[in-house]
Amino acid sequence: MSADHLRHSVNQYLEELPQPVQIRLYESPATCLAIYRLLPQLAKFFMMSMVFNENFILLRDLDRWVKSNGKLQFQEAIKSLKSLHLITPKKNENGALMIGLNSTFRESFKNALTGGQVNNSFGVVIESDSIAMDILNEYSSSKWETILHFMVGTPMASIPSANVLNLLKNSRLMEETESTAEFKITNEGFQFLLQEANAQIWTLLLQYLKMAESFQMDPVDILNFIFMLGALEVGKAYSTKELSDTQQNMLKDMRDYGLVFQKNADAQVFYPTNLAIMLTSDNKNIHRTASNALDSVVQKNKEGAATESAGTMGDDLDDVALQGQPIQDGALIVETNFKLYSYSNSPLQIAILSLFVHLKSRFANMVTGQITRESIRTALTNGITAEQIIAYLETHAHPQMRRLAEENLEKKLELDPNTKDTLQILPPTVVDQIRLWQLELDRVICYDGSLYSDFENSTEFNLLSKYAQDIGVLLWKDDKKRKFFVSKEGNSQVLDYAKRKLNKK
Image 1 (cartoon, rainbow, N blue to C red):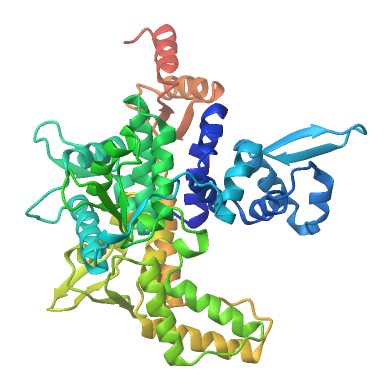
Image 2: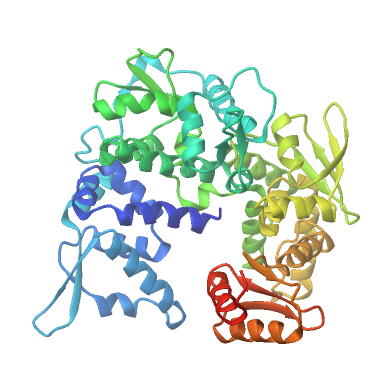
């Protein structure tokens, strides 16, 4: 799931909420701040221009701020603001369309920006009960990796809680076999495993919201708590006394996902983890990986910024890994001969690699394998796309591969400052071949239907095949072999016609 797709999924859920529910959401400053972060960039700009202005603004004035090649983004920004009822339209005396910011959202968002009356929207800190970051990181990693290990089928001493299993089943990431009651990963589950951690968390939370509605739980309380978690500070303790009954009941589920930590179930405080702070982080921060970091550095160099030293670059990559990748995976090396080396002894990393790599050897801190046509086709038939595989390999590429890619791009920029080449971390031959293997599979299209054969003579064959073609249900025919194939929907019509014309069953 890309950054745009993730943001779209969350916004789509918010847009589908009834307007009274949306207005109640806007009473929380923390929620308003989170929703602002999920908006498109141009919509954010319009919001900031209106938050301290209580007067209505002519829509054509906003349109004048946008370049001619940005009209599509302008329309998308206005559409997203309207869908969330963040703006109110009206016409002035001349009939010109004007818009104003939702008054409830304006006051809450203004308080969030200025530190005004936030009404415990950002939690109540208990200063004396802070906790070590190492404990929180270990706890969140353990909880989250337990879920992922269970999905890939790694033998484990403990399995996720019943609530988590129910969530995986309802979200169609796993299915339960009726005969053995065992859980089996689905096509959607394979795709889920290759997503980034924050996209995975939101996938589960959106399903959690849908299930909560069936239990008559207040979606406003649930969303406010989720958005609040994203605004809290890791390592600090927060009181549970100010939480609603729904939010206190949510604590158990959030513990199962690794989003919050409590010393015991009856504790009066909770601690947000590093997974929780990714929920409402800005788009660029949540999805910022090491490869994206290098891309931005190269772009700065292209624009004339000072080139950073290799040591500074390494520090930048380490900082990025800590901020955007709380659960670390091993570094990958991919060669032009399709051989792959993963410097990792993590069972989870190895299990995920086995989804699209033919693993050959395993050592104390490394596994080796080969990217083959069969391994990629197996992944493709399980619902994993070529772009997801490529993105996964790029995200987990060894730092040396990234540095080499950066050096090559810098050389190209020196020769041609206007070059449109981008950072190529993986060998182009590997990337192109993975995409070609997907195209091979895409050539075959499956249809449900019926095959007609064993005709006594060509007259019968021509009569029925022509009828099937005339009504638009014929998908394939072979005149020499006297066979043809019709769609599932049109099969009954062809059978009825055959009974009438040929007097056969």
